Length: 419
Image (cartoon, rainbow, N blue to C red):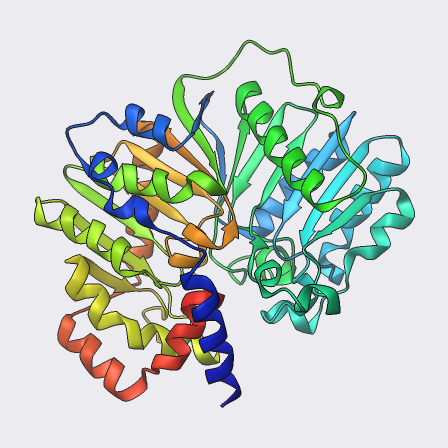
């Protein structure tokens, strides 16, 4: 009964204040309009990037992240959704404290829901408030408090952005949180996810703008843009790219779906799509685009039953081939596929923090980067094939059976709005 009340409250609140209308926009969905023109409607900021360092394993990203912190000379900007310490992460957090103590300016935003982390990290985590003792400027975005509970709108809107900028030179974007399950549980045991590290002055500049906007919304201590110089390197890279913050997320995704002519590959994480999003994919399928959706089944409680409840409609309304990646060939449970990725026509790639679901399109602070690079798309398509090798295709008949035996509509609604 309590769950029903929560879901109804969320539904009534959100139906009046959120929109995924971009997925019904004839202008954004038209394959006749150039993608670059569509992205200008989404207020996407054009940048240029070189080929990134790619990390699919949290253990490897943890090592590289620590190196970047140790080498920092002027400033470090960090944003994460879930942030906490654990014994295996002590080197990273010690490096952050050491950097601050030697005069590097460290600004760190973590979402206020970090203390309520319900992943495996909950068994190991230590809150990050101790960083302040070393001079780290640490703020929580929308902390969960009695005051905020009186305004449900502030509780629902979360900062889901994961970014790192070091000295205006290196910038990282992706899906990995800063907790045990994302970074510290060991090679081949961390969640399957990705981070991309770029050396691009224009991208670093745009990401600094994003960070300052988030910070100034969250803290009485205001930051000035001029305090964070960007590398003077003229090596901008050979690939055109576009960065969008929350307000343009749905528009960017809709634009790429509308521009695809041959193939779309989507890693959505939780497949909680509203009717408009499913309709956009259905339109793409209808004009001959091969749409593949590859996702996990999060086996934690409500998530699995919610996913099973949604599968038949997802397949029927999108016309997509749907694959789930849960078990390896020996029947062992794989680490959760937490990656966010879209590839279109072996050319365009969207990476960043946004899941392809209703919450990320409407209810979270997100940061997404669309890159025009056949070379990067090729590397990521190889990665997709490695994931598909351990995945199972779910037919419509399979989905109906799973929904009947294991699905739960209330769990789906909770997943749909709550993530």
